[in-house]
Length: 163
Image (cartoon, rainbow, N blue to C red):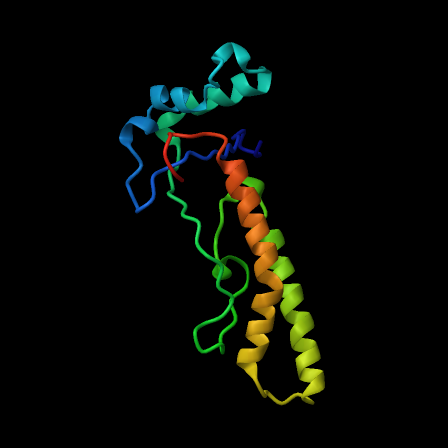
């Protein structure tokens, strides 16, 4: 809850791929109620579930909608001379709130590799593409793991069909 008395709520809905627009029917109180009500019905909700459902449905006209696509991680440009870390290396569903953590992990790994590289080459840039490749090889498995966990967590609400 913010100082202004506002509550932030985050949610995911599964959408078909290909950049399809978010259906307007989903953006209504009735559409949101249908999406966020468990299959067992509203009676299955606990107090927090009721609060969230009512808050979302009663504020349907104020919700910020954003289509988030998962993208494959990429830590370097094709030439290997530009290093991407954090969100620039690839996005994933924010359902686990791991964006900042992953960015910090990326930065720490890059700093460690760059420190060793500079020490070994006495401060002269030698094979930058090899360095960016090494950083990508070190970080990609972890980013893929976080992306998979975030995707799995985000799939708790579905519209049928694929993500």
